[in-house]
Length: 153
Image 1 (cartoon, helix red, strand yellow):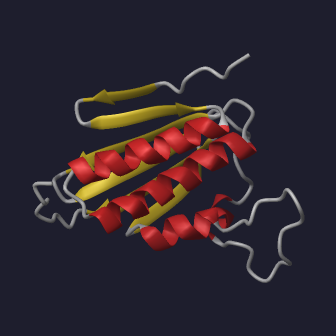
Image 2 (tube, rainbow, N blue to C red):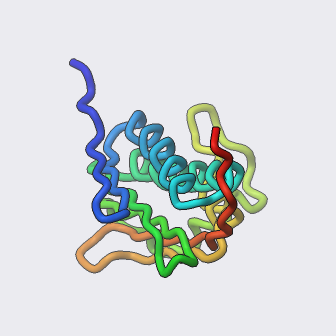
């Protein structure tokens, strides 16, 4: 049976993608890159946004049974905001998401590299993570909009 297509919506300059399966993370990253380009970010900065969205969306699939949602929007013509909301159990120490492997041995076969949160921190200007009231985790990141003139082609 084929997987259902991910649910994506663009409402009032806000992208929202429901992520439940690995393919949804790929779609979210592609849509995030496109949203960033349309918001005026350079190709390189848009690629960084795609990595951030991909890492957050992949975590939604990997660490929660019910998945979650990734959202991207502009704020005050100065920021591109990215938020991931999940329906999982949360974390006892949410800030550990950004630490990476920190001296732990490399991953075992089939195990995550454990560097996604660290990549999110490196590729954004501000990031925070917290447990949500009622369960789940929220990761919020912002990237400063450094607008570039788009080439006409």
